[in-house]
Length: 370
Image (cartoon, rainbow, N blue to C red; front, top):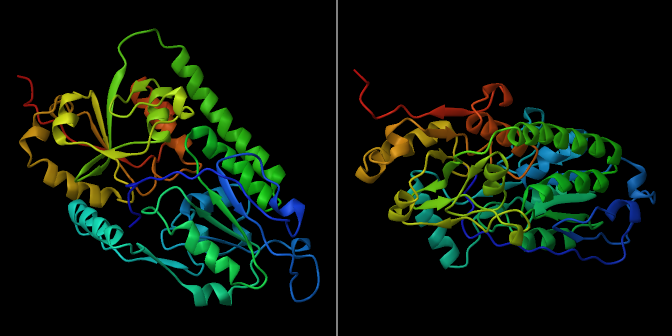
């Protein structure tokens, strides 16, 4: 289970020494952290980038981006959370997690205990990674110590490999950063042309939604409460409120602002009283890392709470359960799917949403009208 975005910490920096090969490390500006490779060559003495680069990813969103730009054939190892696209799930698993999902509250307790004692939440299979050498590139992140393995651990591993691979850490704060990361990854694996086409296609899809939103006459805006974790309640952060607002809604519990680069601040916990006071028109329950089956279990618990049952959105059947392992929480290409779905709901235009978008609606608790 992919853990949720608690304690999101953003480190936005780019640093590097003299690269082994300029074409390997030149990437568009973005919120990325690049640790460049050593000058050592592969054992055959050839330029390592004269051959297709060998890549491992310990970040599911980066894996999705790599595959989008036509790099699935370059991937030789993946994280335990990588389950999309399906054609990479046969690859060796290089990470693991120390927590076990039982309930949302229990996961929160496990995470708090581990972080409080300075323990990592993840493991790294160093021996398997060594067996995959030589490696050219490791895709990772430095956005959240809870969501995936930390950058420092990955960098220590890379420094101990021979030759030393490039470490590319993706740390998007908003939707624009996520889309730019398509170009970043494409450049890093020498698939610039494919990345440019993929980037343009994503922009074109978003433009269709933007146009649809722009055509709507001014009127009431859907007040959304996005639940990124149910116990304790964490509200959506970073790119999620931005997507909601761009699609024509509002997210008052953590709004996106220009001061934050178009995104919102990190996800944070709110007491249920504050959640109730926001009086949402629509509640989106999309816990990070939980699929629909797990969400249904959590909803059973919420349904036992009086404050939850009395919410206007709950009573009117305006609660959407969205697969949190696939949508919104991974900063990758499928954020565009989520954007299209949001607009389809706000504008009441179901044709805008992907036909296979993973959502279920909670039944209304209001008695049927006579």
